[in-house]
Amino acid sequence: MEKIRLGISSCLLGEKVRYDGGHKLDRFLTDTLGKYVDYVSVCPEVECGLGVPRKSMRLEGNSDSPRLIVTSTREDMTGRMTAWSQKRVKELENESLCGFIFKSDSPSSGMERVKVYNEKSMPAKTSSGIFAKLFMEHFPLLPVEDEGRLHDPGLRENFIERIFALRRWREALSDKNIKKRLIDFHTKHKLLILAHSPRHYQQMGRLVAAQKNFAEKDIYKQYQDLLLESLKIKATPAKHVNVLQHMMGYFKEQLSADEKKELLELIDHYHDGYIPLVVPVTLISHYVRKYDEPYLSEQVYLNPHPSELQLRNHV
Ligand code: SF4
Image 1: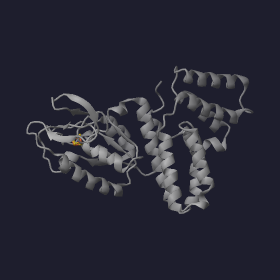
Image 2: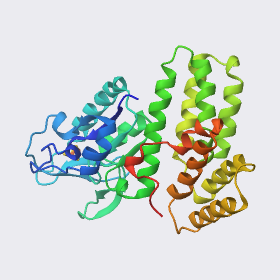
Image 3: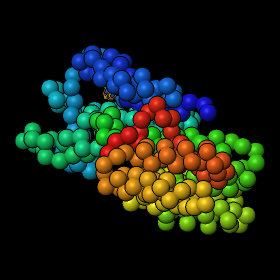
């Protein structure tokens, strides 16, 4: 698989582009996730022509349409940043991005909960940074996160699962025999999608079954939208348990009573939060290999992202 292309706020890569000439290097993003990713670095403040170092800015006024103000001089940079951002998001259409990682709290790059100051200079509301807001409006379903939220293991897992899924989907789209690839993609992603949203899985299934009734472009757009919407929905322990029990059903004949009891206990312990998801998944993967179970061996659910990222290891 080719590397995943991800947009990222430049300072997270260690580039010295912050207002004070510093950076905000994030080692997980560069050293760990970076092995699988080609980053497209974006620093809105430098790229729109403000130098390094520069005076600090903040959001002020109405949280629906805040102004970007230089704190010390009161200069209003909103128009300049907005015009540059509108041009930059158009350019980013050509980058095949599978997502974007924003720098938290920045009045330009912050994804959410960026402070908006009132006329008394108090942080009264929150909003998104000017560039981040325009990016998310332009690419409404593209996976986005900020580096602060990515410290939460559940949010990290969800984001990385989505960018890998989108990469696989883009790869399927580039296949000449896309009709067959759509069925294949849908089949292999069944359990992964069910762990997030059984409702979306049904909708996507109806779309795949009726693909000859749609123009090609429409069906792939609709399928991609449903895929991204479904994976954004949190995969709860209860939904994972349904998937795990469903997989266990494939080994009714092969497993002894003791083995079934052991696996059920692991699934219960996972459900109760005593052990991470990786434990029952690893045992099931072992049975899939041991008994050469063809349908499950193809399921992306068992291996949605590289195990080196250790994403299913949290309780
Ligand atoms: S937060 Fe955004 S604007 Fe600020 S230095 Fe980082 S990339 Fe540049």
